[in-house]
Structures are given as C-alpha cells and as structure tokens.
Image (cartoon, rainbow, N blue to C red; front, side, top):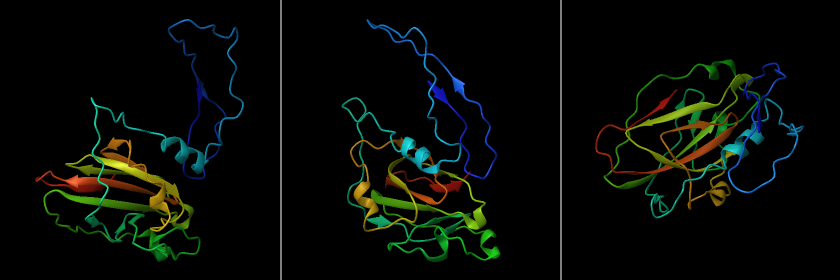
Length: 204
C-alpha cells in the first residue's frame, strides 16, 4: 500500500510517498517482493481525490441502519459563506461559482449571522458550492453543530440541480458531522431536523 500528499493549492510537488506492507489472515501466498505502485496520482489531482472520497459508504445493515431523507421539504437557498456558497436551484450560480474572471473584491467575505428556522422533523438538503476565487481557494471543511448528516453526493464544477442529483447515493451514504467542500466543486448534505437544540454550520 502506498500513499502520497494531496494539496489543493499550487504547491510544489514533494516526491516522496509513505508505504506499508499489509499481511492478511487466512490461506494465501504473499508475493516474494512487494511491488511499489508506479501510477500514484499527481499531488494536485482534484478529480482523483474527489473520486476516492466519493467511495465512502455507510454499513447500512440491520445493526447499522441509515435513514436518508428522500423527499426534501426544505432545500437551502444560495448564500455567500467564506469562499463557499450554498448553491441555488438552477445550474448557473453566477459569480459565486467556478470562474476565472472575478474582481479582487470577491476575496473579501461579508461577515454575518443568519438564522433559518425549521419545523421539527423537516427534511433538509444543503448544497455547498466551492469556488476558486483568484486561483487561491482550497478545500473547505464544513462542520455542523448539533447534527450528523448524510453526504448524498459530490462533484467537480458548478452544481446542476437538474443533472447532479441523479448521481446521489441515497442507499448507503456516509454519515458525518464534518465534510470537505472540494475546490471548484460541490457537496450535498441531507439530514432530518430532529434536534431541538442549536444547530449551526461552521467553516473550519
């Protein structure tokens, strides 16, 4: 097994990797000499990193059931959020999406607190859209206080409300309380608003 560093900004490549030999239990014949993988992805390969992370799954069995909301009663509308936006219902998020020709003032976020009220047991979907403002953006960890959520999907580029939901995993998505929003990409979280205490979303 081999692994290497992954960065989302234009950092110089560090040509090293960490390796380990995995030994399995049972009846098998290990190779005499381990073979080092010769095709590790490039250190800034966003598509490969996103594809790898999209393989995460819940166990989704009788001992570990999942309850993924399928009918959404409260989709979140577009809002600016420190280089990450909550995507609108349409395929074109305007200046908040993935663009190369944005003015310098787009790197200065508007600081504020906004509250969205949910009825108890409402089903909520939040789509976070990552940006690459002035080619300086990175992946953004997003944390939700008071709730875990299911990561229904993610992808590269601007979120398209017509086509991207077709790729959602509503069978065995991972249940998390922190997720990364990919640079130049999007991620969709779903949860049931059944925690009556404070719930807030934080950019880490």
